[in-house]
Image (cartoon, rainbow, N blue to C red; front, side, top):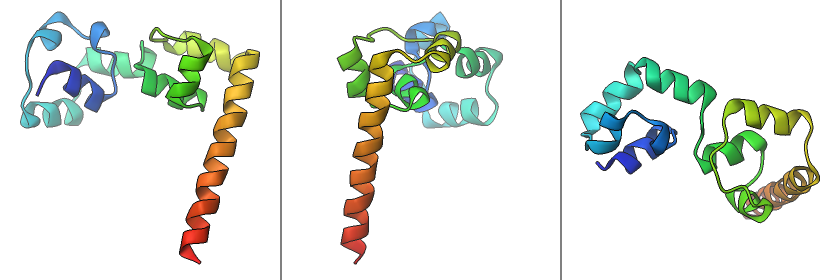
Length: 115
């Protein structure tokens, strides 16, 4: 598989990976091996980032669309995410509220289908 696909499956930001990882295709077995026994660079990336947009959105409790509306285009690391969570700007509070409403509506629809 392409490096971008492997990075997405591993939940890491491709430009932050080692050059060798970025240049080579991986097999499913190699990907499984990285998951089972991650090298130090992968452990460190998963811990401190920088993180891809979907991981940033998840850690902030908002959608990827919410990140785009806020103008957050670059990858963020753990320190930057921690700072946003410690002192949330208005856009983050608003987007978290929006995300909570969306999730509540999804749950309401799920419950309705079950009845």
